[in-house]
Every structure is written in structure tokens, then in C-alpha cells.
Image (tube, rainbow, N blue to C red; front, top):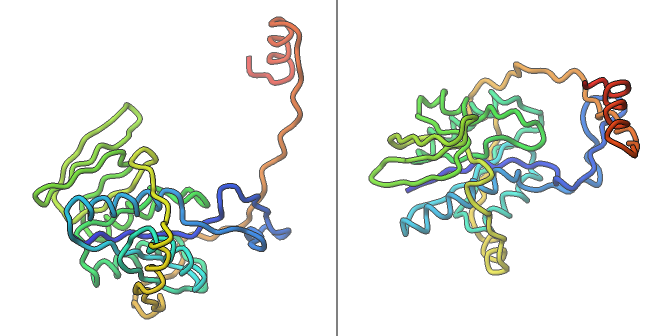
Length: 249
């Protein structure tokens, strides 16, 4: 069984993000980059599927600049078999990324695509759904449990009202939620092996897909600084503050 796992490079959640003075983007100097946490969960689940079945292949896919190879190497050190980097020096919107992924899927022919439900930098939560639509494959979003047997996939997904269990035939697209698993750390032997694993690079324009952006970011702004709080000495004072100052009651 072949599982394709798209991986995105994002700022470390502990990094302090600074918006550029002209509002065109974020300052990338001195920023630590990591695998998107939801994509780490997707890698872990793909590895568990391979370990459970005793065979198969886990292929990583990333779309971005050459520096993104660092995060792919991290995924290879976790245990993935090989990686693909589609290079693009220009920023791509979610539809263009989904189209590139669809072209890679057509070439690789995986049985399953597992991807994080969203990236922590833009939180768009769109690529997985767009990819499934472009491929015409069934999909399950926000997966908190996944099981595969006899060519079928059963997913427990988190919805507003609780949990929903759905089942469908492979191939399919699944997006991961936080409670699906706990990703493993890359071991020292895994790091050593990752250096010798295949990492194929190609240019996005060579795929022949439409990369024209449909979305344009006009401006980024940092959130307003939180104002200092105040202490009150009674419940009555709290109610007065909520009524007169916060105006929430």
C-alpha cells in the first residue's frame, strides 16, 4: 500500500512572528522552521499503516522553495521511504497547491493521501478538500481514528455534534485532527538513514498545471496588543466593570 503525505514548512509555534513594515508578509529572518504539526500527525499515521500491514511505501510531498528539503529530511528521518519536492519561488494559493498535488497523485498513484487538516500559518483548511474534488476521490476530514481493511477505509471524524464514523473504498483523501495520534521523534539511526533516502526535485511549471493565483493578500497586520487587566475586590465591582467598561452585560 502506498501512502502519499503532503508536508508544509511553517514557522515554529514558539516563534515570535513579526509583520513586515509594509504589511506584505512576515519577517523570515531568525525564524525557526518546522513541519506543520498536523502534517506530522499525517506522517505518523502513514507510518503506522505501513507497520501494521507489514509492507508498503510512505512518500512525502512538499511544494515550495529548495530550503523546504530540510523538513522533508526530517520526515524521512521519522521513517518515510522517499520524498518529492516541487519547487516554486513564487507564493501559491491553495487551489494551485491542490492542482500540483493532483498532478503528483496522477503520477505516483497512491492508495491513500493523508494530509494535515490545516496549516498553522494560514489556517485555510482547504487543500485536502480541494484535492479530493480534483481527483474525484472520497474524503474524510478531521480524522481522529483511522482503520484500513480489505480495500476500505473507516474513519472516525470530529464534527460539531460529536463523532461521526464513515467508511469508503480506497483510493481516498483523509485530513488529520490532533487526536489521531502522537507523532514519534526522529531517532539517530533514522537521521543517518534519511541522508541516503531519495529526495526527488522538480519545478512546478514543468507539471503543466494552472498556477495562476485566485487569491491576493492585500495586507497583513499584527494583532493589537492586549491591554493590562485590573483587579476587583468584590463580585459587585466585577459586575460593574463588565457592565460599564467591557460592556459585555
